[in-house]
Length: 164
Image 1: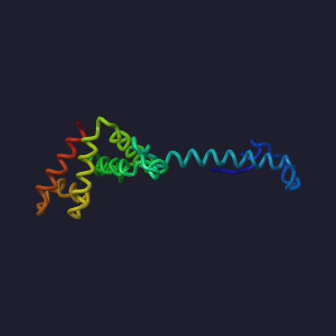
Image 2: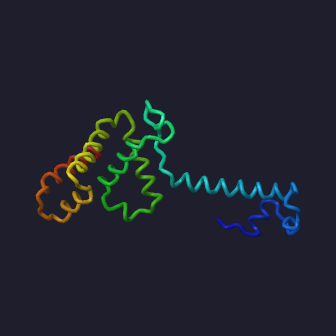
Image 3: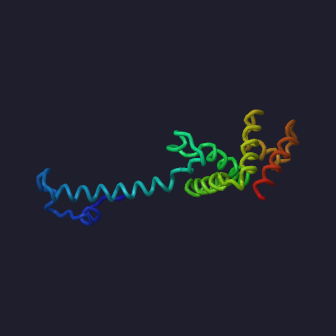
């Protein structure tokens, strides 16, 4: 955000304002107006980048304030299943929009089975010490490996659930 002469003039500052006593009410009003405007811009920018997922239907006290972290994780996993290479190509803002959209969709009652499948996929990978990127690499490069069949079937199963 650029705070220059034009910005300050927009909030009522003049050449005389800087020479006023620091306790002067006009000087305070100009300062308050400028700071409030900057805060609004910052809040809007932060809001666009913040990942805020609504709390679940029956939230505990932490979820009430923090949102649904499990849904956020599901949104990230679903995005990485559907679009394995998109994370490197998208801007941060677009990636966040995609994750938030998928997280909010997976929170809906009609997608409970799909959300359970996404979480099972995540837990299965974690349990076996794998990352979803490894699964995609095996499938995309046709590189044989000991877990090829397992990875291939698991990924295709997850993709079929997400595309329903």
